[in-house]
Length: 328
Ligand SMILES: NC(=O)c1ccc[n+]([C@@H]2O[C@H](COP(=O)([O-])OP(=O)(O)OC[C@H]3O[C@@H](n4cnc5c(N)ncnc54)[C@H](OP(=O)(O)O)[C@@H]3O)[C@@H](O)[C@H]2O)c1
Image (cartoon, rainbow, N blue to C red; front, side, top):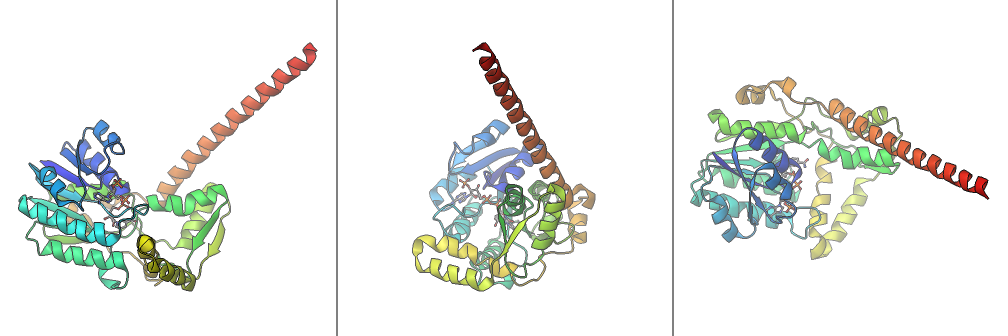
């Protein structure tokens, strides 16, 4: 079976590519920049250059492909908006997959997308789910709540560096999952026919609020967090200002996501049925405690090694200067 992975250079996409290769699938990745994707080639994937916003690049990418796994989304650093990539681009991809008579199409949405019509990315996910369901393709929609990997830049790094950690009022607890585990569900879906034409939540074992994550990071790193709470009103005002300029629509749409987190409603779901259908044991899925423990112990060990090297260099330099002084 040949897979086309879209978004394989991303946080989740790379884990899907890794798992697919480990399980013996022929993997082709649609990439915008082959230099940035060189690691995928080293792993054994075939690269095809393309862009979901350029339909003509999708036809050759889909030739000979059995299944598509789409883990692409607009990048924060790009000028491209969610509307251009996550809506127009996905419509292009789904239409091209229909034309190419692809057997399976796996799409990543977000849990609860139907509940936030005023949040651009959520509304786009809801519409894309509908478009895919009506396309006639044999689809599986996976709806994660949040990625553990995102916690590193949002909480762990600022706490380690003594930088402020930003929180917005009542932040909704989120049932994060490691992208390596999410990849297991995506790849398993290909082998389990019962996952066809169905939608599944993808939630970690428990939902964590921002405050709980900060306490966990503090305990595991031994450092105290500098927490700054930003009122929702301020974020809304910044968002409106950004909305005024076309070049900052992307940033404005991203800020809108804080509306989801500010509801205080937990982003989580019961996973019993999902584990059963996919034939995955809950104990195969990592916890946030274990994920952060592994991260902090690795980083703190590295910092200790660097400190040791620095001290050794200082001692060597001091000894050299002492020797020089004794010679004169
Ligand atoms: N992050 C979360 O917590 C979360 C939660 C729920 C659902 N999801 C969903 O999970 C999926 C993966 O998210 P992620 O955080 O892993 O994404 P990510 O790290 O931001 O990666 C985005 C990927 O999409 C590619 N891409 C962007 N624009 C493209 C275009 N025009 N044509 C082709 N490829 C393009 C990027 O390629 P380049 O390397 O070339 O930029 C990159 O490979 C998305 O559908 C997202 O909505 C994420």
